Amino acid sequence: MTALTTDDHGFTGLTGFAADVLNALGDVGVGVLVFLEVLIPPIPSEVILPFAGYLSQAGDLNLGWLIVWSTAASLAGALVLYGLGAAIGLERAIRWIAWTRLVSLSDLERGAEWFHRFGKWSVLLGRLIPGVRSLISLPAGADRMPLVVFSLFTVLGSGLWNTLLIGVGAALGTQHHLLEQWLEYLDLVVYTAIAAALVVLVVRRIREARRVKRITAGD
Image 1: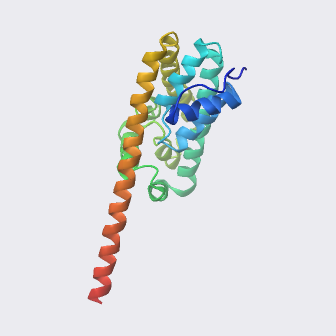
Image 2: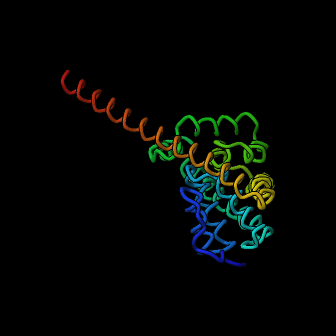
């Protein structure tokens, strides 16, 4: 494994954060970032993995190790969510994660719907669908899907997804300006989603406070 050779990578936003982690940890850093992405969806693999692939072509990271570490981290994160679903059940897991405001209730319910509609195959196919990719592990755990099958499908689906995104970055490795445009666009999408989530949270809090006030006044 190798680390980045320069600290002044010139990237900002989420891409800059990813560059800092990769600069400090080398190939293993992509595993750390992907593990966080599974558990904290606002950190998107669509930003992290193409950038890591780009760096592999610049000679700073190893392409094969990036795929290995990212897929291993995807499995580790999926097992955490699988364990949560198995330990406390689907409804409680959904309520708890929705309470953190890191994931919308609609996304959580969509993941559960996917699993109940397509069964175990949703674990394989869901790894390729943003918004479902991580959350499909909760209903799989709650329904006690066989762990070996769950792990195999997770490795296959996540491995394909990770290889695809890393490959995109590697293909753009000699075209720095195209990569920057891609990553800046994704940064903007992510920040917009986070801002929208914060607005929704504030509006919900205000409405809840008003409802409590009306109920109190009625008493």
